[in-house]
Length: 425
Length: 121
Ligand SMILES: Cc1cc2nc3c(=O)[nH]c(=O)nc-3n(C[C@H](O)[C@H](O)[C@H](O)COP(=O)(O)OP(=O)(O)OC[C@H]3O[C@@H](n4cnc5c(N)ncnc54)[C@H](O)[C@@H]3O)c2cc1C
Ligand code: SF4
Image 1 (cartoon, protein in one colour):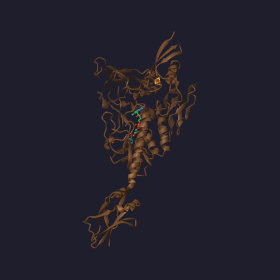
Image 2 (tube, each protein chain N blue to C red):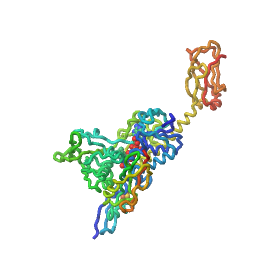
Image 3 (cartoon, helix red, strand yellow):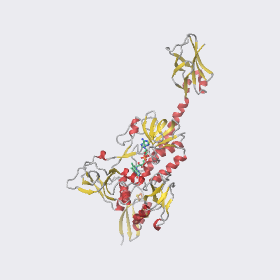
């Protein structure tokens, strides 16, 4: 639950990118860091990547995904990072105002001095690769199946065909086999493997799962549920080669056809997206085109190794902490100008204390009640008079102007707020 | 008589193809690759092992499954046997990362460890 409506750094997404950013932001002077995560726990996608192979660079150890995540979770907690779980960020403005909603947190509306976007990536789906045929149940992305099998304890089928030789697909082929399912084959439209060789060896070769390169799914067969898929061999231009079709009975097809950065929110904030990476244009501090909005991890581009995601998160977190400190310094220089006795409003609402080092500051105000006799227009720091001018009368219809002279510099430095009043002389 | 066997190294994401010259189980030379890769190739030839990661049931946890992994590479030929044993294991939440879920599984000297903390639901 948040109690504040203003944070130094707010991070969207608690995957390895967001966690590394949060830790680095705290280590680099951010006073309060909040991570908002839509899932009910921290760690991001790593919690479902139960296989080994993480952390060789960061920890010189071969860890399962959840262990890699746990180390960052522990560090983040040690560093006093605050969390809002089960909470979905709906909108971010270019002024870094954030709207989110959640079962327990209700409506969240807060402002961040800097923001780190770390929403990760999502998987390409059937719609994005256009497979003809029926739309029966039993077609899922490999990552969805991974979550069911590894976290929720639910097997979506018993005979599988996997389309795409990406790492998630191969890792799922092994996982499903270990869980007693039959993986008929893995199909890859390219003439080469798209995932890592090590996954080919330890996921497919070890379990005798056939891989067919230059093959794709021509058609999905089945009314209510997948009953088979028709595969076909393709030439270099991905054109199906007639006569090479084959029907493979199965009840489930998994798609492992790539990841795309998740940037709906970024767009709403006015962040410009590179059509090639699918992620924001960033500078070397991982700042987007919007000042104070940074991005880290797979939201920027799809990384090969989670270690690099953590490193990018760390850099973004440092940059975000620095930016927040600048904003805070500027905020601290601003003094509110308040409407006191018989003043309806005053413009500007705040002034920078340092302005008086160079020029006077002109204030304009309107009174509440007319006074048809000579008045003082005054500005005070509590009871200390800072500037005053006389007028012959004051009427709500006429704006009154008052200048704070440069000679008031020292007095204004001491003020928490300045109050304007229009009183009878 | 010396023979040559090609082994794909899985020790790091580079995935080098190593050529092992050997006489029976005696290794003469491994090319190319790094030190860790050569150690892997030597093992792969005589006693292939893999890190295994899977799940066990957990009672009273945030999720119904707890991810676990082997404390060291496990004999490749016995992975299915390992899975059968672990299918019957159930632990109780809360549990801490690194907790030993099964000690010395199947007499291999390898322990089964919790991959993460799991709080009580
Ligand atoms: C299914 C799948 C499997 C993968 N498997 C591997 C693997 O085996 N090995 C590997 O190295 N890499 C893998 N990756 C890549 C993996 O994404 C990265 O290695 C790493 O997890 C990226 O970290 P991240 O912090 O950028 O994103 P993530 O870990 O994806 O974290 C993003 C977090 O942001 C949250 N989020 C998103 N939008 C919002 C919102 N609007 N409000 C609140 N929270 C939000 C998400 O819930 C999530 O927790 C996989 C990716 C996917 C999608
Ligand atoms: S030989 Fe060395 S560099 Fe090559 S894959 Fe194996 S560990 Fe990596």
